[in-house]
Length: 100
Image (cartoon, rainbow, N blue to C red; front, side):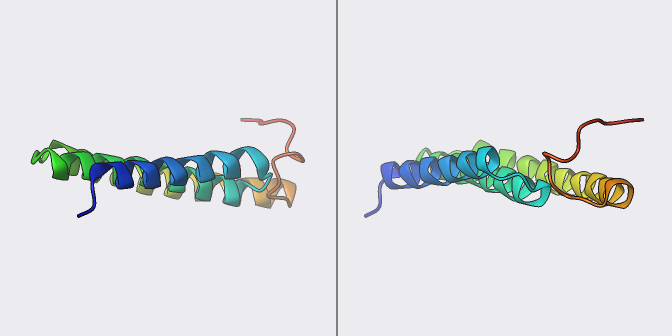
C-alpha cells in the first residue's frame, strides 16, 4: 500500500523542479510553466492529505486552485502577447521597464 509519505515526497520533488525552473529560465513561457508545475505539486499534496484523512476540504480547495491557475494562464498569455507585440521578445532579461 502506498502511504501519504510517497505522495508528499513526489509533491516536494515536483515543487522543487518548478522552483528550479522558475529561477533558472529566462523565458516568460517557461516561467509560467514552472508556476503551473508548482501549483500542481500543491494540488497533489492537498488531494493526498484529503484522501488519507477522509476529508473533502482538500478536494474542494483543489478546484479553487485550478480556477486560479486557469486565470493566471489566460492573463499571463495576454500579457505575454502584449509584450511580444511591443518589444518583439519573450525573454525576461531584455524587458527592462514596464510602461502603462
